Length: 259
Length: 261
Image (cartoon, rainbow over the protein chains, first blue to last red):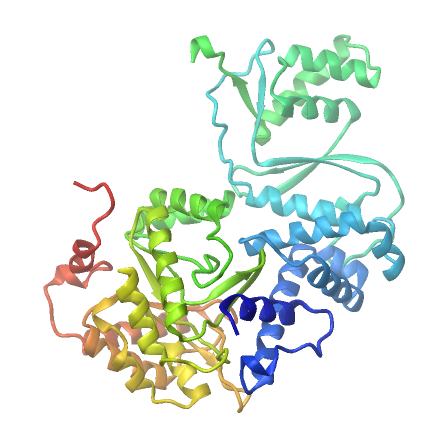
């Protein structure tokens, strides 16, 4: 057996949906020993994914969750070198097969929203862009605002961010939310903000890093049909101060000629 | 690597107190897929940042056909595998810009008929690649139990002059037909004995206790470390105090950092 065929055969035996599949006798005299690898690989991935989606796991139930993980391993096995990013690949599999999985496993309507939210939490916690690569100066309405790299914006159709880790969904009714997840500077804990439409629009525009704050405010207000009056400006001032205090908003990009 | 927040803050806090030595799981040195370029580039940046004197990974494959198994899968102990792994270790060392050590794994089955034993396989890879050996004493013990050979004899055949670091860990014996390397139990007396046997032959090299799960109390963990420290002191001849550091000057001189004057 060649080097290449051995490795391919063992991989197939590890990830086959049929547990009865074992590597051929050419691998060695003891097929039970090879099954140990199958158990170890699969339990590691299952634990990693369950850890990443604790609330989804609780909401869906252990048996159904395990079956979905089994399908993921058989149909779209992990390709990342980082174990902590396997839940992201599981989420991508979930997104690609949402309709089929929802039907086959009678998943709650909010299941995909919950998975997306839980991954956003993890991604925010792991985010390694600690600082902006570009020089940041004091906050200025006429300059481009800079958000902390350790934040994520997500739109959901259910209040999945209010689900506790036991998966309780008694109050789960469809309602759209725009959320900003960010990392607390001192504790590194991930926190979440429910955004108004105009704030969600502003933060989304800020991610583009191409417009000044004045332009962003004008465009965001227009997009949601809000008049920029004194009350709006006062609320905006409070909001910006809050975002700066939370570390979501870092400051303004220093123009190149002055950096 | 590729983590910020609490993880990076914890690493930075440790780096202020201790030297950092890096160790990986998914380079797939024995794999037939191309070495992972993005992973190596990220790792190269990371090892420069933490100033590790060497990086280690395992004598195994973890990736096949693009699928990353996150498991240390066994290589055949053959001349073909020696050449294959050694060439990849040399490429990885070039990509990282620092010396590498390869670690012997626990293996529960061997693909096909071996052409040599584990010690000869490790020695051949280390000699051909010009790298060092990270000797996992617990892995040798586990393999000896599962494959029916003498652990001390296997250790004695290893290229002990190339050992840069030693790992010890606990293992699970609940299944009488197979000992599992779990890193989730206390170190057994048999492994402590094998460590002492090894250290009497290698001299003073750094010893790492691996514990990944089922953590005991802090006091129990410290007691294990104290026992390891006592074995290290008792098993190695008295040396100059400067050599009782994490890094042996002898090893660093043998593997000067690339670009160093």
